[in-house]
Image 1: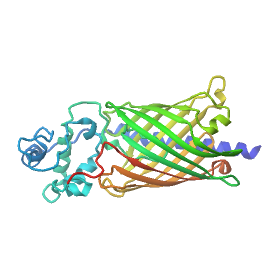
Image 2 (image 1 turned 90 degrees about the vertical axis):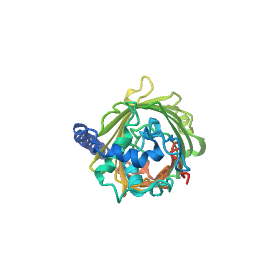
Image 3 (image 1 turned 120 degrees about the vertical axis):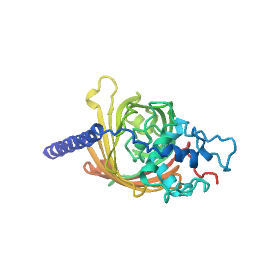
Length: 366
């Protein structure tokens, strides 16, 4: 069938172009990893005179005579402090605690500190985490809908999908994802999906359960982050059973994160390994996401677009993400997955997520 062959050839060309674009986009960031910023000589004095009253000279937040009612963040606790991007701390220092959903007892210093000293204070705060090999919070980008983040996280997500396909009943799925950071660089993930699919007749119930492990490979690089992981898929869903698939699937992957100027670039390449004796049925999946914040605050809007591929099936997903609280601990995203080919099989899908970063305060104490 010449038409099918041509379509697959075009799909292959698009896939190769996308992979080349990812590599070319990463090379400048990998080559241009920047050294830590220099701290102006006046910054330690500013910290001791202005900031240590609440946060203590050693950054623990433990002072002999507390001057505020709330408990300050312990900057020496690397698991919490290292995950924060500089932009969040910059907003808190310049505009005060209420600007980022924190206590009103945190004053604003934007009118008395220039940019160099604000950046210097952030670098000074970073030094309170004395342990090495924690990935930089500056690479903790907003989550895309499909692409796995390279940064290890502590999150709970609800991911609904509604698929509309021509001349076929609609399908729906709701995936619950629990992510737990393990130590400095690892993450454990558990996915429990519920789905409504059409297989001869309507089937509802549990989908394919997933268990995943992820590990950050290069935490000391400042311009990019690479993580490797694998998914175990257990064929507990009706669709897998109807297809006669009873063996677990093993899916290794690599996830990447970097920036192009002020734009986020995230990518993932995954290989779905088949059961023994069926290597020709293997599947290659990859995705590329490009997005950009509209402001420096945690509750900003983040528009983006995601290119996804599963073998010959290609799709684009324009999407937008919004922090639902000033701290950014709650967020939501919505998008529309539009097929570029195989339109009858893929269909148009309404996708999105509701996210909770459970180690972050949703509403800070006043």
